[in-house]
Image (cartoon, rainbow, N blue to C red; front, side):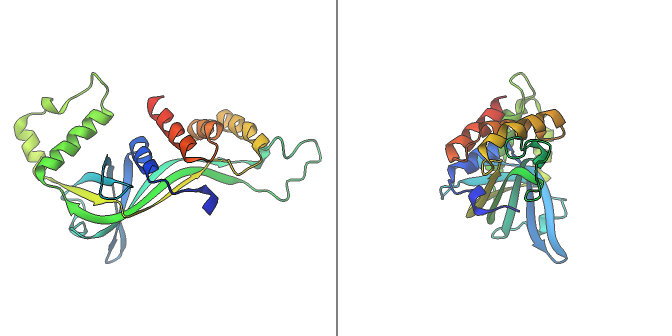
Length: 227
């Protein structure tokens, strides 16, 4: 449903998207159609400007036999999304006889699709990826990897496979009402906050602070991580 004006080509934004929304969906072609798995990502510097991704999956995952070195993989990072009602466009449609025949509901969302080819990670890199996941997502006084019993740690690592993917291409979409009439945006923000369903508050924050530029999107994503 998106158009070119909602796309971002700045590769540095990939890092911010992955760090803000690290839980990803992986898609690989199988004999009966696409196979899907999910796991959190760790962003790494890569050979290209967009960087690289590391993650791990259980070896018993049904997708694992297809996840071999050189396999092309599509990775989706789905950010927040929310339905937008034209009844919130207070500037465009005012008064008792307002004509809304040339507008319709839409959807605001942020998403990132990345593609590349798999590499297996050696055990040392896998340990570093897991340790970085713990540091990224545990509170400052939370659980630490060093607390895990060494024998259990060794056994668990044998049950998972680590992967690395250099990002060959990406498609980043931020549809956040910036293409609408500017004076309608406060009504959209108010409508989202009043409805307060699912991702409404997050989308309201993004709409309120986003002006369509890469710098603005980066600032809004980083603000979400520190809220």
